[in-house]
Image (cartoon, rainbow, N blue to C red; front, side, top):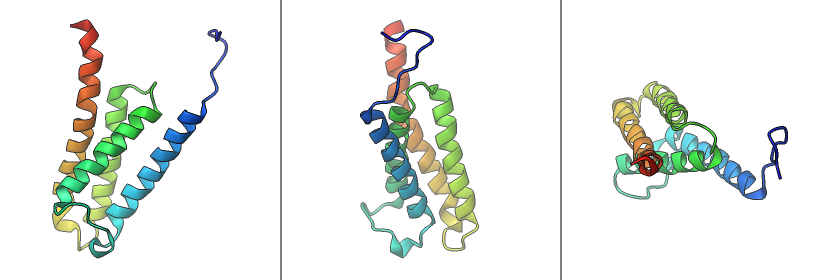
Length: 125
């Protein structure tokens, strides 16, 4: 048994999810900052790709930081999206779409956290 004085050591699943988060952050950063021609297209809409990227990134973040409050997780993910949008705004090829991409990134964060929020409210209802 673990008491209040003892801390649990992270298991292999925790380390795997943390590694997945690091790789996801690297992949999203590289995809966001790379020239548009160098990034492989998954769907024909870049807005859908932005939404999906931040949806997945937020889910991995929620799985990695289970003790982090939902509000802080949202703040971290939106902060990351804002930083990427600001950097992209200085690139001439991305300047026009930086705000639209930011809105899609934030929509991905909200789409991922809405079911978590509802799930936390459900036992109270």
